[in-house]
Length: 93
Image (cartoon, rainbow, N blue to C red; front, side, top):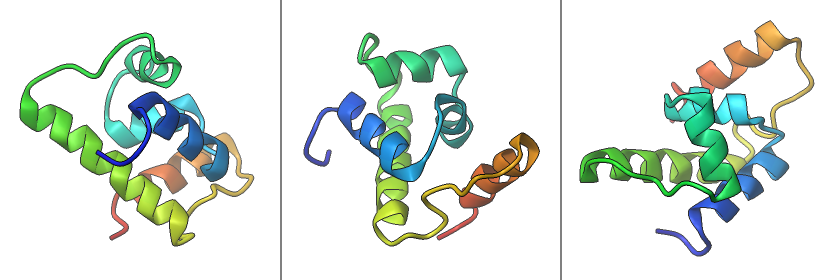
């Protein structure tokens, strides 16, 4: 895992990437309440080891995309276009 707690990393990506909790829920393919708890640091990431590795890899990818300015920060968009944009990030390599 990269430096920093999972929650701190999520908060940094949200702030610098102009992402919302709902955006992250779409990105991680997890329910909004679960992701909100991860962001607040009130619920640890749980599950099978491969599920945890998947989420860690997805966060690392998001951090890399932000560092390289590939689709992030999210520009000002309508709600529908924002969903399309975040979903489109998933196919970015």
